[in-house]
Length: 75
Image 1: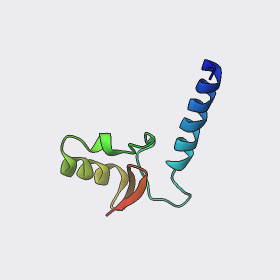
Image 2: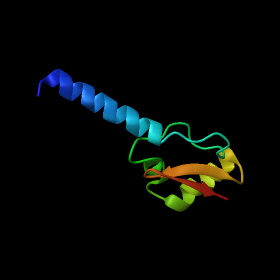
Image 3: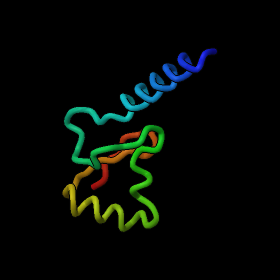
Image 4: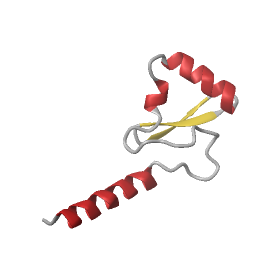
């Protein structure tokens, strides 16, 4: 395959992953940007408990986040 076709397929794959990680309308407040396939897991490291406390302080008692590609709600 030509490099141009491979590049176009890679861009298309990233776009599809981006669409899959978008939060639906009415989803609780959440960190603004989530990485495809990783979600918000990097922001939860190294201390997950402290990260949840920070999100609760920033977004309120009910907040959303992505664990991989699964939407989660914390409260």
